[in-house]
Amino acid sequence: MTKTILVVDDEERLSISVESLSFHEGFRVVTAKNGREALFQARNEKPDLILLDIMMPEMDGYEFIRLHRKERETPIILLTAKIEESDKVAGLELGRTIT
Image (cartoon, rainbow, N blue to C red):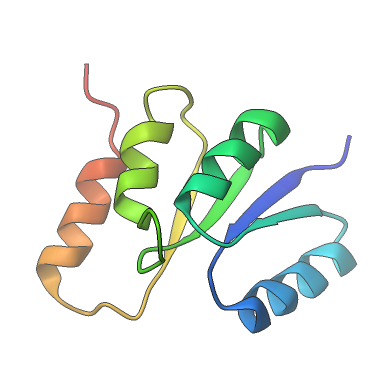
C-alpha cells in the first residue's frame, strides 16, 4: 500500500519540489497552502506523515498541530525558517501526546 505524505507550505515552489522527490520514491503526495486547508486534507486523506511549515497565512503550523493532535497522532516534521530556541521548544511540546 502506498504511503501518503501531506505537504503543508504556502510557498508553492517548495511544495512542488517535495512532491516531485516524494513521488519518485513511491509516495503519494497531497498538498495544502495553510493550516485550515491542511486540517481538511488530513481529515480526508489520513496521511502517514506531515511536512509542515510554521509560518503560514490564515492558520499557522502551531495551531494546526494543536487541532490535529486532538484527532490523530500523525508524525509531523516541521519545516521552518525560525531559529529561536523558544520556537523549537514550542514545536516539540506541541508534538507530544498529553494525557
